[in-house]
Length: 313
Figure 1 (cartoon, rainbow, N blue to C red):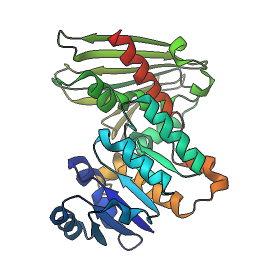
Figure 2 (cartoon, rainbow, N blue to C red; figure 1 turned 45 degrees about the vertical axis):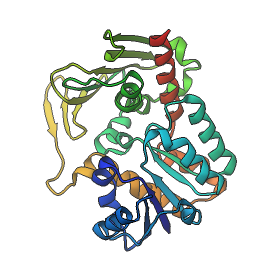
Figure 3 (spheres, one colour; figure 1 turned 90 degrees about the horizontal axis):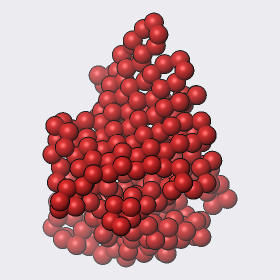
C-alpha cells in the first residue's frame, strides 16, 4: 500500500516513525512537508519511499497518518476523507466538538476508516485489563510535576488520556444514555484559569469509573487500577502490573526483548491499522472500527466539551 505521513513533530518521530521504518518491505511510505529539504532528510533518515511538498500527491494513497498540530486536524482530515482516503490521526480529533462530529459523520458517509490514535487502547497490559470481568471500580490517574498550560490544551492533550482509557475499560458505557446525567466533575483552576486538578466520576449500571489529573503532583506518573471481586490490578506507566488478591501479590512484567513502542501500544496500533486498511471491505466497516478499538471515542470528546463548558460558565 501507499501510505502518506503528514507531520513530523517530536512525538511522531519517537512514537511512530520507527514502526513505519520497520515496515518498509511491506508498504510504500511517503513523507510530506512544506519544506522539501526537511522531507528529503526524513526520507533518508527513516528509509521512506518518497518525499513530497504537495498534499495532492497523496490523494492516491491507500491511507494517511496525520501527525500535524491539532489546529490543522479538521482541514487535513476532511480533505483526505473527501478524496476517498482513509485517515489515522493523533488524538484529539479536534478541540471543537462540532468538528469531531463532522469528521466522524463524513467518514461514515464515505464508508471509510477513520482512526483516532489513542495508543493506550492498544497497550498490551491495558488490553488485558479490558478483558477482566465484573469490574466494580476503575481509577485512571495521570499526574504532572508542575504543568502550567492553557485549560483547553490541558484537557484535550493531557486529561483526555485517562478519560479515554477509562471509557475504553468500561464495558457498559453504551448503556449510559446521557453523559451529563451520569457524570460528576470536580475541577480546580488557578487565578489565571489554568487547570490544577480535575476528578471525573461516572456511574454505569455495573461499574464506577474515576478519571483524575493533578497538574501539581510533584511527579510524572500514570496509574490504572481495576478492582474486581477476585483481585485488584494496578498498572503503572502502562508497563508494570501488580495483582493483589486475599492471599497473594504478583508482579507482572514484560520480556526484556519487548520494545517500548510495543509496551505502550504504538507498534500494535500502527500495524493493526495497516492490516485493517489492507483488508478493508466497506460492508464490514463497523467490524473494522471495532477491531481498531474506536468505540466511545466520540464520548471522550463529548465529555471534554461538557467539562469545558462547566468550568467556563
